[in-house]
Length: 465
Image (cartoon, rainbow, N blue to C red; front, side, top):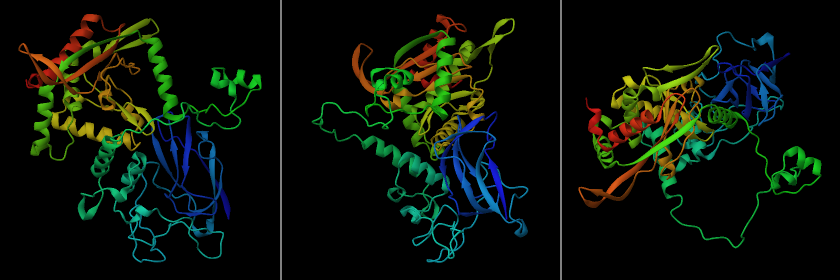
């Protein structure tokens, strides 16, 4: 027998550290090569790490929630060289977990694909090696009778969706991504349909760890609070790490290096809503989710071509600075995910048809919500859209994504009284706002760009050239 250490690998470009989100194994578990041993979260993505060894788990060297530097040992394995256990050449790496068949359960019969489960009676495929007889580590969740691939199960967990309540539309009763997303969106719509009554307590606090210094509640720094010797349970401390750490650093850099200017315009988007309705009814878009964001994306691409400086970037050089004007659009879409704010982008969006752009938006949104957005998909953006309308907001002053010169915010689209040909009529109205780097673009260019975006949303026929 020999003991093998497994060090945290660099699963991205230039990764220096990652957080251990959840261990999927425990000491004494028997694992095969490419069995998932844990989930880690980097500044950009959530990654499942496969085992590079076959053997028995010895010791977990990092706790869940701990941030570990790349190259540090995180787990040990006890392997038997005489049986061929150990690292295998060609083992599937992180993010490329091989699908395998699980052994037949002790009761119920029939082998099943990992992640699918059976109709009942299935047990965990990993067994304790330290006991004389095989015993289960834990019962499989009650949703094992639901047919759904592992990524769909994870998506459901992230969105808080109970798979047993989802109506499947896939072949042979399989739950698809669209099924989960539809269920989640319907739940969010009806979640607040009943307004709760005000409680009898006027104010309450969230309990904090017993060692949290009370001075923090009064605005003191942690050091000052500790020095004061005061302590109570009125303050909760939330570590800044992972996506939140990366986002905060980027936003501070952008806010304090680029002089932001924001302009906005309220518009009649009724014809955009009519176009979205027609596209949804079109057989050509039967398998594609269509929303006003699609028209907004096309409008931004079209307007950026007419005002190229919004798609440029300020570059510091040894001799001073220069402005890089990009003649392509890598369109960023700010996405609120269970892991925090991500800004993946659609490469060369200017070359996509309306249908291809719609598909790209669908893929981008689903991948982001599943936590599978790769670092490469978040690099190289040229201009960004943030759809704050999905949160019911009318307008905002967004912060520019670093490396870009402009970001456009689309507010909620709602019916309001609007003057048309001298008469007040109900129309679908929204507000388009844009923040820009004033080093790169002047007021006339900002205003012209937002006016162009507004023109397309008011009359989508402008996109037909």
